[in-house]
View (cartoon, one colour):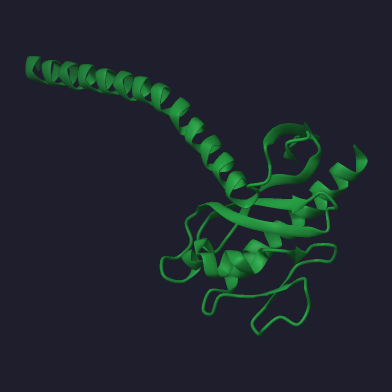
Amino acid sequence: MKEVVKITGILTSTCIICAFLLSFVSGIAIEKIEMNKQKRVEDAITNLAPYAKKIEEVKLNNEIIYNLFNNKNKIVGYAFVAEGQGYQGKIKILSVIDVSLKKLEGIEIVESVETPGLGAKIKGALFKNKFKNLNISKTIECLKDDPTKDNQIKSITGATVSSRAVTNILNKKIDIIVNLVNKK
C-alpha cells in the first residue's frame, strides 16, 4: 500500500510540474506566435502593394481592413484577410484590392494545410498570379478550362476543390469588404 501511495505521489508531482512548465512556455510562445502572424500579414501586404508607404489597420463591424496610403497620405487601396474551409482545413488568404474596389491586385496564401503536391499548389506563384488585376466587380469564377472573361481563373488540375475554395472564400469576403468600405 505504501508503494502505491509513493508512486501516485511521484506521478502527481511530475504531472503538476509538467503542466506548469507547459503553461509557462505556452504563455511565452503565444505572444511570439501572434507577432509572427502579424508579420506574415504585413510582409504579404508589402509584397502585393509595394507602392503603399503607410498601412493603417481599421476595424469596421468586426472586420479588419488595412487602408493603404501612398507617400502623400492618400488611400491607394485596401487589404484584408479572408478565411474559410479548403479541402483539408482552413485557408487564410491576404488580398489587396484597388481604391476603386473593382480590381483584385493579388493574393497571398497566409495559411493553408491543403494536400501536398496538389492542393498545396494554391501557395505557388503560378496559381496566385492568376488573381493579379482580376476584375472583382463581378463574382470571381473558377473554371477547369481557360478563362475567357476578366473575372475568371483556371483551376489547378487535380486540385479543383482547393481552387474553388479560394475563389469562394474571396467572393464572400470581397462582398463584405466592398459594402463596408462603401458605407464609411
